[in-house]
Image 1 (cartoon, chains in turn cyan, purple):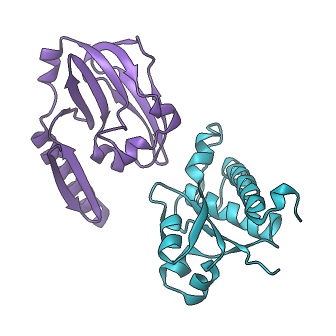
Image 2 (cartoon, helix red, strand yellow; image 1 turned 90 degrees about the vertical axis):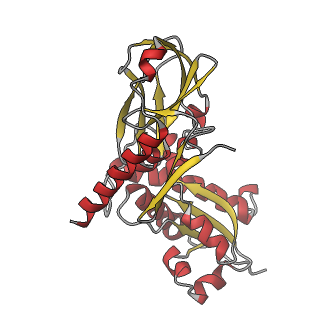
Length: 138
Length: 151
């Protein structure tokens, strides 16, 4: 049975490390860790009302990754007709790893990249749960 | 229902609750049965950004007025905030460890930070700002910032 890929929507905030962390994590999940099971939908396309982006959300599991308390990715996914199955926030991964101080905007420092990897690992786990692979179903 | 003063500048709306006093740096102070409950004003929390950590001094710590009461670390800054009165810390909001984001989401309610049993409160309170005065101050501060950003 063909099933839709899990849609990953990261924060589009430019100019803040916590936004960049969400995008780095999203790239890692969709390009390296779980490319067969996920696809990235840019938040900016949803904001612009792109029909293809909106269609990707239909009947798909959606994972939002926000970079601040405004949770734009989660809100926009819902406004675009998506059902957000899991919502992550890069602030939470920082709160759990206080020694990792993220810096940099276009390019994160090592601590920021490490936070992105840790966030990606949590998202990988969520993807596996949503696709049933966490139970050993390949 | 509590009264609030509010103003909007650019895309931001700031609220000042009228049932409490304020420090010059933007802490609110609410006296309840001889104890001072303290937190960040809406203006200060918005100005500071999303709070990642709040480091409060432990319960039982004796402070002079002006001593560091707690430190906040946000996505923008790390700031020491100072005690509005001499006294002993009598409580710290446990949410500051598990859910410090409440400073941003509910600054006047569940986002309170700590409580202080004050000494010489009657004289200390005269140093604090009434809500109307604080409201005027932050309006002026916000207008100056907007002007500076426009330069």
